[in-house]
Figure 1 (cartoon, rainbow, N blue to C red):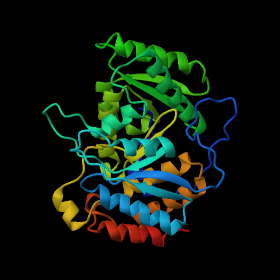
Figure 2 (cartoon, one colour):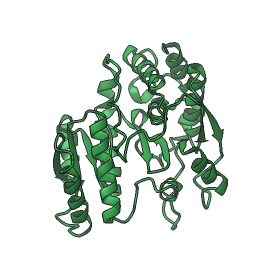
Figure 3 (cartoon, rainbow, N blue to C red):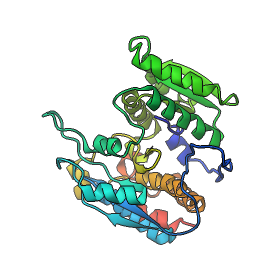
Length: 326
């Protein structure tokens, strides 16, 4: 898993200036933003999902319309209790290359697989249950390339090679090989047990982290708790050809029924995920506008959902974000 520095809630409550990424040299084969930005409106597959999913995806739709963002959505109904992702949904994502989704409820027990995981595997989104040299080199290269393009200083590999000597040993070997090609970026390693403790006690020491899939789930959810909760943590699953953007932690957590009934789900995580999507589609100015508006709303403190210390509804937060768009 390659991800942003997670001091997110702290960053959201500060006044920050926007930034642009370093131009991408033509010779680079892996980039954070693989699609050309020629201004043509892009089709994006939209999966509202379960629970709070329809609430927060609708929030994104409203904000995108208010921004006049150069994209449009192809919406499909997919739910966690389905046996599989419908073929037409997979075809839409493969055609559009990009998907925005709400969480899909994950059944517990009974041998039923998570459609959240199935979708990533179907699209080869760098989330593999088997650690191979190819997969390890690919995710390591992506982590370092992300760090390079976004002016990050350190990449940390999270592992359990002291116990999982073969699988995690191969993962570390691949990370070390790739690290040699990026001398300007510091490379460190940390065992996952210690990593979780360090995340809680001294989170500022981390920048970009790269981990096998299982540890990535643990680290991302720990980081989400520190940053302000799953409601503010954006995320994206990116592969060589396709990308799916969603809530950054606990994709199978679709919220409590009472939250859905009261329509008080926090839309910030998916709004920030959609900003990541806009950058992926090479629309950085729209991403900057959206992120700036979200930061202003949270910083002012007038419209915050319960998880951030307020009592606002989803729609009230959306209206406030739209009002703060430049």
